[in-house]
Each structure stands twice: as structure tokens, then as C-alpha cells.
Amino acid sequence: MADVFPEDPALPHPALLQADWADRYAVISPEPAMTAIRAAQLALGQSPAWVRRLLDLRNRVVAPFGLKAAEMKLGEAGSVGTFPIVSERDEQVVLGFNDRHLDFRIVIDVASAGAAGSRVSVTTLVDRHNAFGRLYILAVTPFHRLIVKTTLGRLANPAVVSR
Image 1 (cartoon, one colour):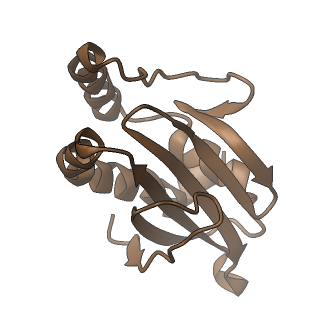
Image 2 (cartoon, rainbow, N blue to C red; image 1 turned 30 degrees about the horizontal axis):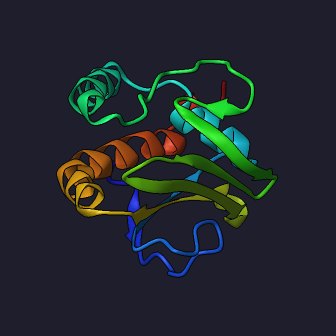
């Protein structure tokens, strides 16, 4: 995770103009000319077992509140991991969905890092609709940051990007 660095997210963001919470992390990947969808698939397509267990726990905790379950959709067209694709271009992919308590987007941007490879950044945007949405983000933020840093950090590993 030492290769992952935080950045200031810019709000408002075109992927979710009404977002009132955001964070952003970036990493340099040794793969030159990486596309955003490849970065998303490498980082989010195969979550570590501990992330899957946290996701299962999250689903059990929020089910009584009528929130959408996040399910791993390995290989499903139109999604990366648990996240539906909202839009896709070579240099950016937007993932996410809307729910009763909040709307969220994960924006993965890629750009050239010259001889070092590709610069990949992940911006998480959230529009919290109500007190439950604010409480939910407060509760999950420490886990979210750890997951983002871990999954994004995979892109700095030459063994991961050489697949």
C-alpha cells in the first residue's frame, strides 16, 4: 500500500454532480498505456478473501434496511466485480449505482506516466440522501480506505499487471 497516495478530490465532479462526500487515491502502474477498464478489472475484478467476507457481513447488516446487496459478479458483462458500469472510455470508467440511502460512483482514470508506465487514480463519489446515508458512510469509511488502498496497490505490482 506504500505505493498508493491520496489526492484531493475535486467537487463537484461530472460523474455525480450532487456528491457531498469524496476521496481519491492514485498509483503508478508499470504497465504502459493501460486502459481504465483493464485497471478496474485488475483492481476490482477479483477481491481478496477478506474483502469478500466484509462484503458478506455488510450485506447481512444492511438487509433489514432494504438496501441493495453487493454481490460478486465475476465475469458478468456490464460490471466489474460488484459494480455496474455506468460509462466507459479508454481513459476513464465510471462504476456505481443509486440506492435509497445514497448514490455512489467509482471513477477510475488512467493517464500516461511516461517511462514509469501509467498513472491510475480512483475517485469515490457519494451523494448521501439522508441521516442513514451519512451514518453508513461514517461506519464504512475506514474499511473503504483500506480496501481502495489494497486493491489499487495491486496495480503497482508487476506480477499482477503482467497477466
